[in-house]
Image (tube, rainbow, N blue to C red; front, side, top):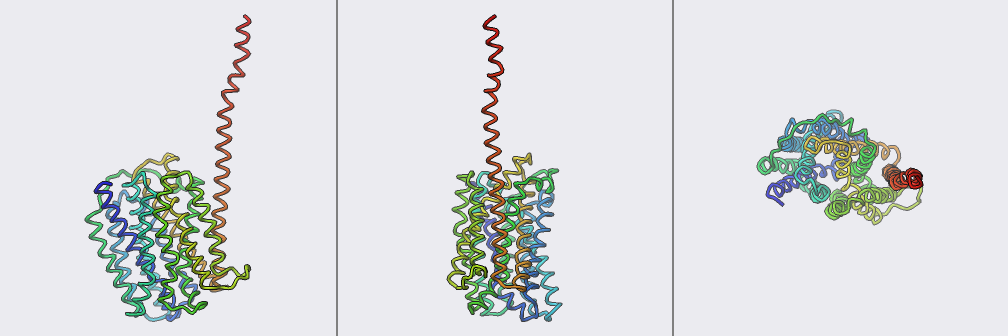
Length: 433
């Protein structure tokens, strides 16, 4: 690797790690803290979900104008905004309970989400620009640091909350984000690019792109659902402490981070199996969500060991499904005459981040609502059904695509035969003459 590639890799790793650790610290203790402020489970889900919704909107806008804004500026400005909002969120425990607390949570989380969208959308585009031939491998490497951030966030947040109170986790990790700003200003390269006329609408007219988007949506929906509901389920069902819940949530993030580089290398080395990685991963995720509760119709008693095993399987299967998606979306864009450059990378990374955020909004809000009205077991079953639907649609699409390819190959083989048969009588007549 060149010096520029190494420095870019360091910058992207710092962005993924710091952003994810700040995002994941809320899971073990914020739902419990919000309940003490008089916030219902449904509204807690909305607070988690609004972050994703604003990331969705921000990703689409910033992805479209990444060339005009500048990829490097977008990264550093996003990290600065996200760091400031993380620190401010740590002082919301001093706000009056009820409406004032809820409104402030929504406002701070929404602004934080825009900063996060800027950093992550730009980081995807920059990574694909610097490593055009190893996108899945680099994405897998970056997901190691995503996994480390998700691993350390819940237990570290839970420990600091138990030891020092509500404010310290946010202040410490917000300052960590601030430290990444000068680091990225120093080591990230600047990119010169020309804005294209391509649009999200044209990209979204491709059936394959929309199908992959739905896959990404179901993955992030499942993660967002677990962030918002797993901690309360574990506390109520298994009488676990806040620190123990933080350790439980490692069950997803540890296998996800560990498997990411492996699936990334496999995806780049054998690109023809990417689609089946997404299908098999989706099926495994669907089964795991149905057994996580488990779903009441299965008549299986909830047990801690079963929950832990299913969380581990979800971590592996989510990774298997997720790693090939960005590369497949980019290839599909290039196959449909989108130019190769930073502008197209911005569109694809913006769409990817937006769809991921849509799932992160849907998972906590709808999952929180179903959990509030029914229970965690049924809500997890709904997440499993969505993932199964995405995998089933992929099977239908890819099977139809294979049939079409075989028919095309068959027609190509038969055309020369038809031409020879048409010419044979003429040649025969000429011979008799």
